[in-house]
Length: 591
Ligand SMILES: *[C@@H]1O[C@H](CO)[C@@H](O)[C@H](O)[C@H]1NC(C)=O
Ligand SMILES: *[C@@H]1O[C@H](CO)[C@@H](O)[C@H](O)[C@H]1NC(C)=O
Ligand SMILES: [Zn+2]
Image (cartoon, rainbow, N blue to C red; front, top):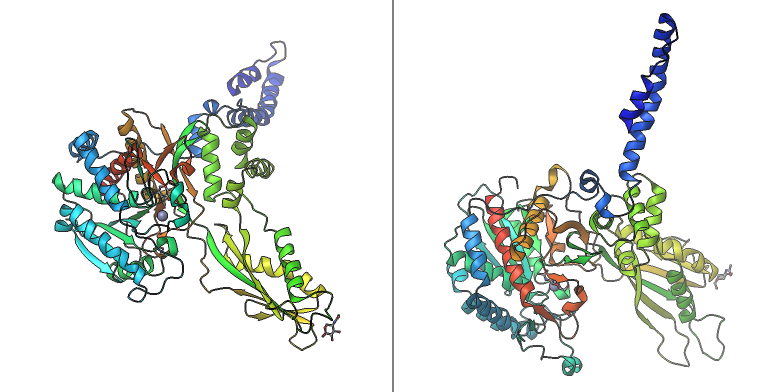
């Protein structure tokens, strides 16, 4: 387009005299400058903006800009080992063994409950004894080769020495515990929750997916690597918590302290823990790696006002006032914003770049969003139609607890509720607190309450108010959003190593080739993992388990509910993934 315009500009009239011609040519050339700029702009615009809305019409360059993709990465030095192990994994003999290993693990109930007493006090922790015994007998190579340390009795650290001590170790994490099975729901299970039944296609039971699949895949991988004679150059460390489903207070928090003491801060090349999505979205296979986690805070909203006899009530009791405050909280949520640079923004850019079935208008908006605020807001509006997406982006609120009143003939002197917030990755706990304070202040004023918010007295403390409103961190366990793991630029070598590993595993398992059969994207998950304690160990934390659910959707796995299952093909692919990851990390000179 630009070259044609330039040609036209050189067409000079033949009748004008020499001097005039020269001058006019200069003038014309000067005129050309804006024309050329316009042409260039139009050309760029047409590349980015005037495509038909199909992902196929985006240039490779634009796609890489929206959603950078490394090439598939498979082992070079260990290519023979990698290929022969891939073949072993396809044999019936191996598959039967792998099924037995996971099934056996599922058959040992290792439930963790909320608010358990410390290890050594609460007898329910003893359930982990048989599980440790099981691991010891099921993975003889692992236990003969790796050094095992038990941290806070049930936490497990396995250390596999590498020949080169200067290399930063790879840390693989998983958790031994499972969500409790509600006894009332047992009849609803197609196969009993502790059966570990294999029906020819899937392995059934609590933990089959979350997260005994991760733990057993990692151990099966290491067991097989040892059996095949592999000796690491880069140290591999495994860290298995035992109360992830109850916030990791006794498990991962102790494991983190152990690892920090032994290795120091920023000493691991990367950490891979459970999580992420690996499924078909908008007609394209995506692997979404958790590069961040939302924060968490529980805010207690407490109201007091004078008590007395119910026969002479005030217009509003403490409970009535609290209710008005809560209605106000629900009516004034924090406005979610899809900000550039956040993992959810990057995820949507990846969907726009490669998701063939994305509606054209949405894709158009997303492609323009990098430069145009208006387009970004349009994209946001469309994406927020999806409640899950919206919840992942913003700071959410959920009023989960309420308490107040003791007797029907006594006015309640106090009442409280607890509001649970999941804090946006680009926000903070304090910002959530400020939002609550600002939201409630005017209502408190209208009820003539003095206000204390998070330790600060906001109204004068004299006894001139009718009652009090106090906002506080309910249990003092608030969690900031996790630092965001780099996924672009110089600092993102570990991300590229992981992404390349995902791609080569995907190809190898399916016997296909090509760079973009699966698109790897940054993203976040709705919950937290044990990695909340591991921030100091490395800035490269990934929540990703290569948990293929195809177009079945992640709900198909039944995690945290009845009928939890793991498809055999997903499980075998996880083992292939961890094998490729360990070998790739071992060879890498860039992490
Ligand atoms: C607030 O309550 C106090 C104590 O009951 C009362 O003295 C004061 O007049 C009230 N203020 C207003 C504005 O109603
Ligand atoms: C597999 O998916 C389930 C359900 O989403 C999840 O809870 C579990 O942790 C995942 N496993 C791994 C290893 O990521
Ligand atoms: Zn889990």
